[in-house]
Length: 293
Image 1: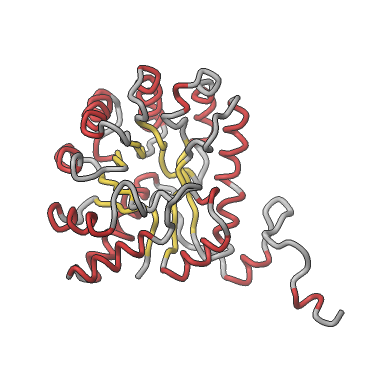
Image 2: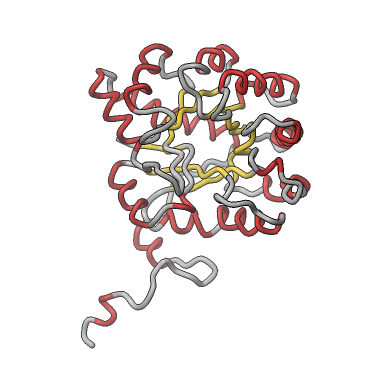
């Protein structure tokens, strides 16, 4: 089973997670820019973070045989903080980078006027840079949030079929599908979707344009949830072709709209010998170098 996790925050995960993900079949990920768990105090904090998503994290992922891309944006939660909004003016210099495959996460958290402004501005940036958009639908009042999101997208220059609406569930999937958008589902241990609910949605609505992600971050989440959904699909009677469509071909198709998706990695020996700006992921000398001491 080959797996592409289209929404996972590897910055907050360990190298053990990378090893476990590769063993489970994960060969590609997209890491959306998001908040850090506490408020940023200036745009400069974003820029260091964006640089890490473009450099260090793809390097770290490659050591474990996983292709890493990212999406760049001012996230909806921090769109409400006037200390952070100047980052909008600097996004164009990041959106031209080869490893950026969408504008995101954008969308709504609390559905404020500030979030309206940031969403509209970043949808325009996506259109200007010919990139798709990863849109975060709110965790509260989800149907109203979806409808408000669709209204703003329809007023933008970005076509609906270049938009991935994420964090969908049973209350929002039908209207999102009818709109012609791509459909994203986050599978969590205790909140959002679970494997059984995901299987039920696939049985009811089919696999077209459906992307399943773990959205794993620093909280209680599971970077292996994509594999667990695949196993649950097989157990429910879906054939391997449909599992591959949902867990691999659909995310490849969506992020491929950017024209920047590169899934070929260097060989294991080459990756192991590489450094990022002179730094490797190793600490201390390898055991083989000190075995005779």
